[in-house]
Amino acid sequence: MPTPTIAALATAAGPAGVAVIRISGPEAFAVADRVARCAGPPPSQRPAGTFFHATFSDGAAGAVLDDGIVLIFRAPRSYTGEDTVELQGHGGAVVARQVLQAVFHAGAQPAGPGEFTRRAFLNGRLDLTQSEAVLDVIQAQTARAARAAREQATGGLRRRVEALYERLTAVCADIETLLDFDEGEISPQFWDTVRTELGAVVTEIQALLATRGEGHVLRDGVLTVIAGRVNAGKSSLLNALLGRPRAIVSETPGTTRDTIEEGYNLNGIPLRLADTAGIRDAACAVEREGIARARQLTEAADWVIYVVDGTTPPDETDREAIAALPVDRMIVVVNKADCPDCAGNTELAAALNLPVAVAMPRCSAITPDGVRSVVEVLKAKLEASAGTHEAVAISQRHAVELTTANAAIRRATRLLETPDGLVLAAIPLREAAEALGRITGRIYSDDLLDTVFMRFCVGK
Image 1 (tube, helix red, strand yellow):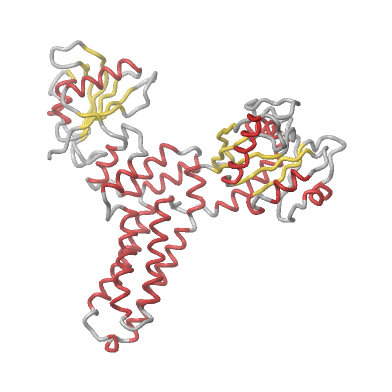
Image 2 (tube, one colour):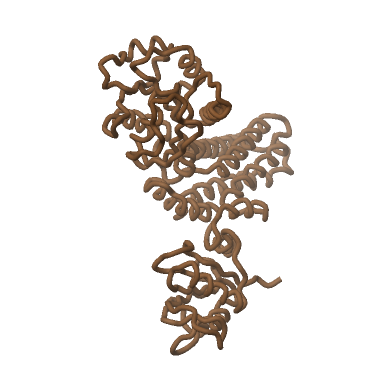
């Protein structure tokens, strides 16, 4: 079945200076010839790397819809590896849509989510990790996340995984050439070499797995839940961190009844700050539901900021809530530290049965300057937990495949210690190599590609 020519709006819909319509496939130039009118040769006769002015119309006799620039990219030196044309016209919901419809009338088909990048992968322009990095670049919430995505897009992860794949398949090849030999005939040096090489591969896999925490932080953001009793100052803290009145603040208990989530850039680390309903025994069904949701979100949180009112003695509600939180992912904020009757940290820590390891920054959530101590403590904690930034930071998909490979290699290593181990070890070693191959796309299925590219937007 011939490959269809696809087209889509490659820029965001709506008012903008420029709208880019991308056309890719074997009939890209024929489609452009039908839509773009220009002085001189038609698009199909233009060399690669050229651009020129044209008007865009719906068919040879159609009315002019827009005018702009046409860019020519010829296979295989294009983003997709196919013949590609870009029509750059005026941004706007109506005009861009009209030109795109004219492109469809001229013979192109609507592109699916991520279909241009999928074709780039299938045509060898990108490996699967670089394809995923394209989405990471688009979705990056901070400069640090964008930098990590760019490093992966240049092949940092691919090179490390490909090196592991080559080393592992070399071991597999050595083992399989000796399967017809009696194991007693194989030199001890061979066994030592195999064990050393497999141990080195496992060490490198574990180093890659250690970047999973930073990968999660940069891609998904750190879900940071602000919890505590009613009127402790949770919403005030959220507003002070954001520098604007996002949440309603009132002296009336139970004002916050549902979760409020906002993005926050903390020194290049993307946070998802969530203000939750205050914990108490509520009579109102709506407030009870809000409290239940707050508890669920707290359980799923990467970090919890538990706010206590330093002017009010802690009670059993505080103690029970804090006891249920993970010590290594919790900060207790003492609010209203500017009040003369605010208790000291030593006194509050004892009343809360607080472990020594938990940080207790003091703040006044009335102004942004009053929460500076909270920002500094949170930044230090997150930097420590995210780990050292490397050239790569793996995703959940990569982690699953690396874990599979790691377990298979360890299983093979144990089998090599048993009689007939050479024969038995060959199978898990091949499983490990296949897992590594799926990371880069050296080995892939349609289901795998669907899973990866369905997350992309149409036009990329």
